Length: 194
Ligand SMILES: [Fe+2]
Ligand SMILES: [Fe+2]
Image 1 (cartoon, helix red, strand yellow):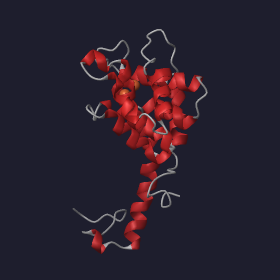
Image 2 (image 1 turned 90 degrees about the vertical axis):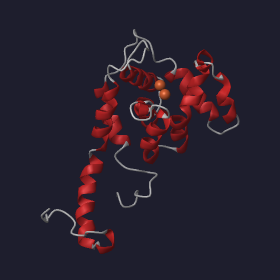
Image 3 (image 1 turned 180 degrees about the horizontal axis):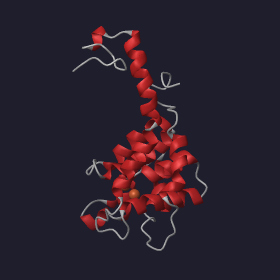
Image 4 (image 1 turned 120 degrees about the vertical axis):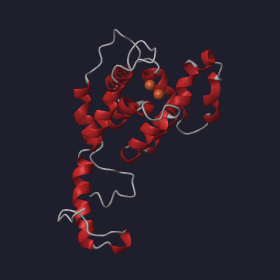
């Protein structure tokens, strides 16, 4: 491979220079700016994926977010509602953790906790049909965010399978995702990203 003036010159990081990292930092800023677009592209993978449910996973996501928005939730919460199941494609056995990890730099600890733990709380509505314990969420009883997570599932997540509901389109949420993911508030890179 030939050297490129817009790329770092080191062969190992031990050889890195300030100039190298200025180049990489410049690229990172562009890459980070395009994060919301990449996230939305990935969210669209849920379109047409019904998994036996009455609505596909994208419509479920839009409906969860729309219900939260119309109920007066703030933008980080609504974006969490939109992305709470984005991990379904790659995290088939642990999807809540995928979305939660993506949201973590941009939302409060409570909103992150809701995303990360919603699977167990949502199970209250169906685990008993799968031979599982619907009260698994009781393991978290007394946790400071227990009620908030139970409320998310009750009001928005478990209710978002209605074919007749008029959800806002993905374009409605795009600017919101852009604003919430514009700047990390909780990341070891928060200062470097300024
Ligand atoms: Fe989920
Ligand atoms: Fe969901």
